[in-house]
Length: 360
Ligand code: BGC
Ligand code: ZN
Image 1 (cartoon, helix red, strand yellow):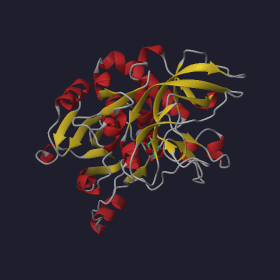
Image 2 (cartoon, helix red, strand yellow):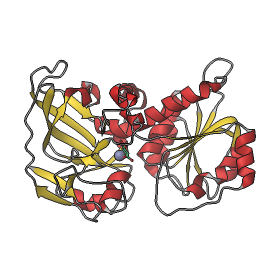
Image 3 (tube, rainbow, N blue to C red):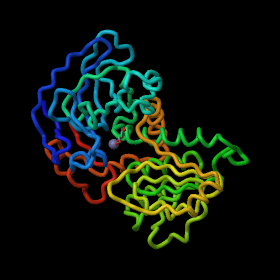
């Protein structure tokens, strides 16, 4: 079958004919690929910059792809919920099998670090015509969001991060007088798909959201900001417009982008670090440390997501499709063929929010 193949740590990516023998066992289903999304992690791998990427055992290559939408083609014995024709999204991470979190389906909080991730480390991904997977790792997609469900995986990571934040912030009373979050402010640094999803989710929870970038908004970004009622701020020109904040979410991974903003952080506020990048430096001063301590500021890193976060993500997608119309479909800024994929994997097309590969 056709697959998009990488050989980490080497640079490069190609469409190849591969033979992967997978039989449908008990509790498993065969899935035909419908769409796969491309993200920064994929680009890090194809450009030889993600040191933790490696092929599965017994293979000298890795099939890329962890943002997937597929259709069930064949159902094995013992499969309970899924049937032929159902649309599904697979979870990315598979647990170590040893730690308690992995044993209860929270491999996104694996303690040993011995997990594998489809299309990233130690497990073939979903950029191929078909694959076999366990039913327990598949999330069923409601019909009404099949067109945008390829966005589920990146969004699930955002759902997990916000759930973590709300849990940690129960260390005190963080709600407003009416018990909502409408008195709270959030800065979201970065306007890619992850930043956009953070903005959407935080708006939905009632936060006053400032979407930050070091440039003007593109027409699509302007449209999305307006539609969801967020304020786009070009930090090069309009930093003075920013009020004190209860939350900063960094999706850029660039310390010099979020550290200067930290002086705006209020008492008991939080900083979520989500983005990662290579070779950036910025200084943390002892003054900043004092601020963090004296103001009870929390800093939380977040990665990956559990099946529950995927389900919650799909519920939000269904609601937002009605509430915000084409905002979500507009996030898919281009749809390419499998043959065109290597080019867009090597470098990001201009104006991209999410580029998607169409399989069937
Ligand atoms: C994926 C996560 C994964 C992470 C690894 C992200 O692009 O969405 O599922 O855990 O990469 O750094
Ligand atoms: Zn990703």
